[in-house]
Image (cartoon, rainbow, N blue to C red):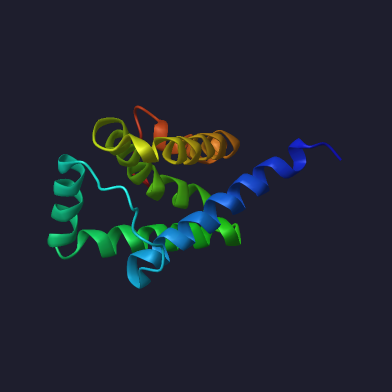
Length: 136
């Protein structure tokens, strides 16, 4: 068998496991906080998310559910669509506010882009410029 036979499932499972862990961490806080303090802007941003009262649980639940979908190989295009806004924001956050996490964010963005390409046939209908409602 070719290497590429295993590439997509491996990337899907690794991505899914990572987001299951990150999602669980939002509720159980088992990953230690970084020792290096965040910049003022990054601290303000994270504090605002936490103070909203709903944003961090929403992000954690979305990561957990999407990660589980990826691991179980169920609803993979939906999981990728749900994770996309988080990954875009993560890249921008790390480019603008806190550079130390940029390599990890870039790896997960690359995984996401690869998986979107691998499952590209599932995304065709949502990329139609002139979509019609059902029954019309």
